[in-house]
Length: 193
Ligand SMILES: [Zn+2]
Image (cartoon, rainbow, N blue to C red):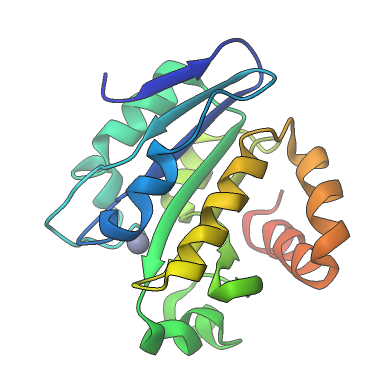
């Protein structure tokens, strides 16, 4: 198995970075720097693939490059699954624009502080591999932006202590009420959860 296990017991979280192309450069350190959670366990895969870029929205991603993710999900059955991606500044509008749903078929990302974006994971993995009560999120760190990456690390530190979907909503609502509302609405509308 390719994942590294920190801590033990429930809840089980799985954090994945470096999913495709050069994204590992801005996401792998974030995961490698994590220490065991106070409660439960955290499995991390800092790098899935360093070269090829295949979008996680493609049906084939999780069957090919992303196969280690599926293997980890099947072995661990995590209740919290988080992907750490990175994006180029010039794509920011595309990712956060209200028309993303029409252009790509998936909901737009929400803007958090320091150009970190929050969204849902690809329906390809969400629908087939996780029950409704799981929490599946995707964070996008801005490429070559130290402040964005540092903030991504801070978020990862917080998220590794997350106990459940309800706990996450409660915590995130304090700081990002609008964004939390949007992410949960997208969840309901898009995934029917
Ligand atoms: Zn990505």
